[in-house]
Amino acid sequence: MSEKTTLLDYRNSRRKRDAEADAKPLEDGYWRRKTLTEMNEREWEALCDRCSKCCVISIEDADTGELYLTDVSCKLFDTKACGCSDYANRKQYVSDCVKLTPKNVPKLDWLPRTCAYRLVSEGKDLFWWHPLVSGDENTVHVAKASVRNMTRPEGRLKMAGLIKRITRWPTPLEKPPAKYRRKAKAPSRPRRKAD
Ligand code: SF4
Ligand code: SF4
Image (cartoon, rainbow, N blue to C red):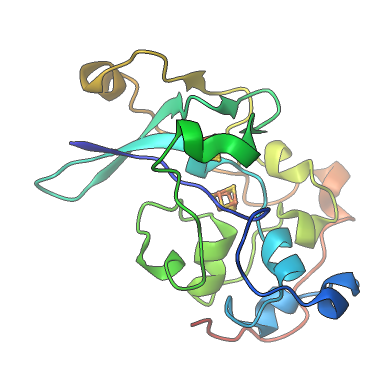
C-alpha cells in the first residue's frame, strides 16, 4: 500500500496572473460556464471550498487500486483551523504535497468526489454548501463536508497504524438546514463540460 498526500497551490500558483481580471468581482455561477483552464487566478482560488479532505492521508491498495481514506492528516495540517499551518514553506516539510492544476485534476483519482475542482472537471455543479453557492464560508463545515476538528496528526504512525485509522467520512448533508436555506442560491444557467 502507498500513502497519498495532496494539495492545492492556490497562493503560490504559477498560473499567469491577469491583474484586471483578478480585480473584478466574481461573476455569479462562473464555474458553470468556464472550464478550469479558462478560469483566471481569482476564480481558480475561489473554487476551493476549504474542505481540506485533500490534506488527509489516503491509502491505496497496490493490487486493486482501491483508495481508503483515513482520519489521519498530513503533519502540517491544523485541524481546528482546517488548513495548512505553514502553507508558504510546506514543501520543505511535505515534499509530496501535490499542486492542483487544470491539467492534473482530471487524472487525480484520489481527489475526493466532493472536491470542487473535480466536480467542475467532470462537468458537474457545486454542492449547496460551497461558499460560492451559499455565500457563507462556514457552510462547508455545517454540511459535514469538511474534516475540521475530525483528524489527528500522522505523528510517527507507520503503515500498520494508518490502516487502523481507515475511516468512513460522514456523507455531507444533501440539503441545507432550514437556517441556511434562504442563503443558498439555485443554479441559474446550464452547465458546460469542463476540459
Ligand atoms: S475543494 Fe478540493 S482542493 Fe479544495 S480543500 Fe477540498 S478537496 Fe482540497
Ligand atoms: S503540506 Fe499543508 S497543504 Fe500540503 S497536504 Fe499538508 S497540510 Fe495540506
